[in-house]
Structure formats: C-alpha cells, structure tokens
Image (cartoon, rainbow, N blue to C red; front, side):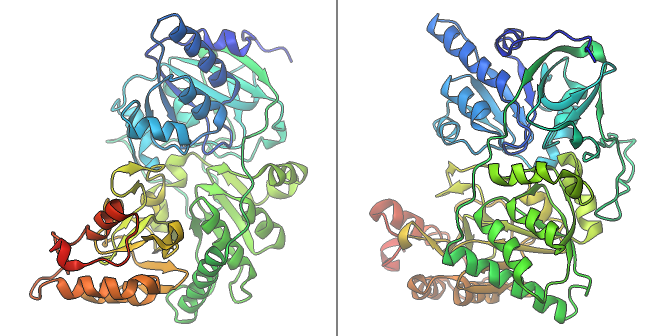
Length: 500
C-alpha cells in the first residue's frame, strides 16, 4: 500500500532539522534506535562547522543508543545537551570535559518531565518503525523507550521504516501513557503479563514530515564470556534467592526479577537458569539480554515484560527466526511503565543492579568514577531499587588489577542511599544489610564483600572513627582511599595517620 507521506532520503530528512532544535530519538540501548537520520545529521553538522556555521541539537532518547546515533553525533560535535542516559565513549568524554550538557535522571521520570514542559519544547520525533499505516498508526521496532511520548509531543515526526525488523513484531508492544496530575489514576497492571494499552502508536498523520526507508540491523554487541568473578557473583545471587525462598521470605512461586544491563547481570540470569532449586520465574524489567531468550525457550522464565530487546546480533537473528514462540512470552512497554514505582512495588520485584562502589554504610555509587567522572548515568536502577521487594547490588570486590577497591569507607558519589539498598554481593560473598545498624552494616560489608587485600585497611578505618556517633564516618578520612589512588595510582597500603 502506498503511504500518503513524503518519501525522503536520510539527507533530506536531516535538512528539515534546525540548529538548536530538541529532538526525541527512538532507542533504548541500540535496540530500536534511529540510525540513518542521525548519521545524516552528523554529516550536516560537520559541513556546517566547516563552513563556519553553528549546528547543534538537543538529544533526548529513552536511554543509551547505538554508534550511528550518539557516536556519530558526538564525532560531529553536534550535541548541545543530552538526557537521560548514554554509554558512548566519546560522548562521555565531551560530557566530562563540559562540552556537552548532560542531565542524568531516573528513566521512568523522562516522559512525564517532557509532558510537564520541564525540558523545553520537543521540536522533532525521529523514530524507527517496522510498519506504518496511512492513518498514522506506527508499529515500533525492537524497543519502546519513550518513543510514544516523543511521537505525541513533538511538533513534527520523521520515521525510519526499517525492513530489517519484521512487521510480525506487531502485537509485541503494549503502548500506554498515564494521565498527568491531578487526573492520574492507577496503572492496572497486576500481573507481569497484563496488557493495558495498544499494540501501536497512533499520531496525527499531518505531523509526519517524511519517511526514510532503511534496512539496518540494531547495533548490539556480543556479550563477553563470563569471568570467574562474574560467574561467582551470579552463583552467589542465585544461592541467596534460593535461601530466601527456603526461609519463607520469598514465596515458593518466586517473585518477578529485574536485572540491569551488562556482563554481571547476564551472568546472574544464567546462574538463575542453571540452579535447579530456582523455580520457573517471570521478569519485569527494562531490558532483555541474551540469556533471557534461552531461559524463555527452556521454560525457566515463563514471561518477560521489558522495554527493549537488547540482544547481540546472533541472538537477534535467533529471535527473528522464532518470533512466533517469543511473542507468546514477551511484551514491550514504554519505560514510564516498565520502570514505574507503583508497578514495581505492587508486583514485588526483586531488583538486581550493578555498582561502581559501595561504602561501609551501604550507600551505592553507580554513576561516577572517583566521584566526578561520569560513566553512563543512573538509568533505571533507582526506579527499581527504591521500590523493590528486595534490592540487590552486585559488583566485583576490586578492579584495575586490584588497584581500586569497590568497597570504600565513603562513597565518592551517592546514587542509592542505605535506605534503599538491602543486599550487597561481590565474588567474595554476601552482605545482607536488612535490619542492621550502621556499625553492623560496616562490619558485614568488610568481612563478606571486601577483597582480602583491603579488609585490614578497611577495619583500620573503622578503628579511626570515634565512638559515640551513630554513623561510623570520619569526614577527614572518608575519602582517603580515593585520595591515595589519585596520589599513587593504588588504593592499597594506606597510612591512616597521613590523612588524619
């Protein structure tokens, strides 16, 4: 069927976007990210800069994206500000050097902040789809993210109609956007598999400025093989949850799982699948990774609600070849719904996310190295952690060949406070912080989670802290291990008197 919309090249579409515009791009990880138009925008920006002209845009997406979006635009120095999350190395460098303004925020908050007008006027929505109808119906591809909100709020819309994604994705999305206060009502998801919205986004056809036909695969990367450390973390997490079930603190039918992104999270999910004492479970999460497809096929995971299919190229091909099977067990939702606190609390989610560092009070830094250098952003970890039935943070006990301890006296940046963090797991062991006072937490974290090379040093810090205070914190010594690394390139062998 011929569509009543202009058919444009990527370059023609990019020419419609002006310097200073704010653009909402589809994508939640590289899954479903716009690809052709951002690359053309990068070329346009380079040409403008070479001619002595200004060209930068505000970039908003669901989360991180692929190289052809964040990467190409960063290379072209075409980004004025970015929100809410990123994972591109060059863009990260530009943010840390102050060249790009970055607003880090909880992913569930982005759509409503746009609706409230807190982030300015959205000029364009640039989204990837696998099907479009003459009446303005849009079938998204391998993610939802915040695309539904972008499409509704933007003045104009450009669509990348990508034939690399089959139109049989129709029916896998559940598009729902809550009303804003004071008219907001409850979100009626009571089971992981509940559907409450539409399989498509519907927009005013007059807003569609053009369609760019593409055939481009998602830019997902293969996962690294699990290391002994990540595998051990995964095994300990599975064993802990089994013991919680045996103790009656998790019901025998288990609870839905949320898992963050990365090799540690992938290892945890693989370990849950291998542990014969873990019953079949559901997932209510923001991203599905490679290991989840295997769990679904094996019946170990019975249903998965997600925001995006963040798969390696091999697993994406497998997904497409078996889409009829997976459509019975997967639903893709907007991030505002996949990460919504109301639903997380109602369903009783067990959240598992990764940390950069954990301090002796149980506070977690998940965003900034040495307290000042941004890595990626808080993402959705806070959405789940603050509202989970059980919140778990995972990390190796040390990094950089042992030169940096992930367990420190005082977090150099705090994203998740002790009030939300319940369990810490490293390859060394498990610290269950529930019901523990500050000094008990500190002892547990050192004895169970710190690397042996750092335990004596961390106990030495506690000995320096004066008695008669509720929190075992020394303002003069709390960041001494960070200062030791900055001075000597290694957190070990600290002399506490030097920093006293």
